[in-house]
Amino acid sequence: MVTTAVEWVFLKFHPSRFTNPNRPLTSRCSNRLGFRRFSSSASLSVAAAASSSTVSEVDPKREPVSLGHATRPDFPILHQEVNGSKLIYLDNAATSQKPTSVLKALQNYYATYNSNVHRGIHYLSAKATNEYELARKKVATFINASDSSEIVFTRNATEAINLVAYSWGLSNLNAEDEIIVTIAEHHSAIVPWQIVAQKTGAILKFVNLTPDEVPDTAQLKEMLSRKTKLVVIHHVSNMLGR
Image 1 (cartoon, rainbow, N blue to C red):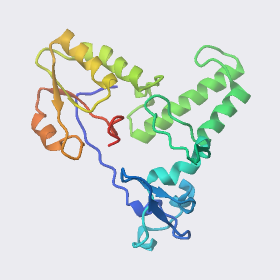
Image 2 (spheres, rainbow, N blue to C red):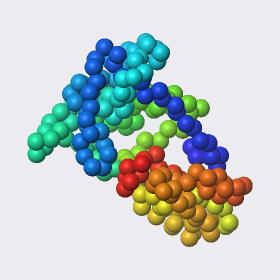
Image 3 (cartoon, rainbow, N blue to C red):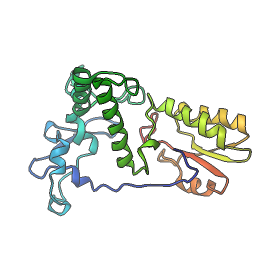
């Protein structure tokens, strides 16, 4: 389901929530790009991180661990070295790696109830369909959707964007309506809206970046108006990593 309302949601995490107060933490700068490389003592599980009782009980002087470092142990494929260094995988826009929980769920599916969804009445198909719909309900609950029928599964982000563009976009956008994107979007989040704008007469507007290479929120606020029907902004740029 797509609406014309634009809503900004900021999740505020205290970084110390992802530290383990019972484990020493060390780090060292490792490269000229300014990334910090953490030693094995920083390899924490999410469960361990979540077990910290309160923020106030965490030593404020202890260096916080990022969510990425806290969840790294959950991805088996990262537990290897390439050319003498720990594997660091950045090509998530093409293929995302899977955590242990997902791998176990996939193995359980193929080992116990592998069958067509919504296309059979036998036991395995019924179970596969039930599990499929249960996943839809879980996603709906997670993002606070009003109904699980609002959740549409696609093969990837590109397919999802094209689906919205050529269904909702062509049906709801008219001449002079405005679509706002940033200049740092992946081409899969720009080209569909260029095509839709050409077909409908909608106007495509671009938000520039600040000197820190992040979207200029001040400019975005100035662009928003009653003509704005859609805002397309990345969470993290696949080019800039920000």
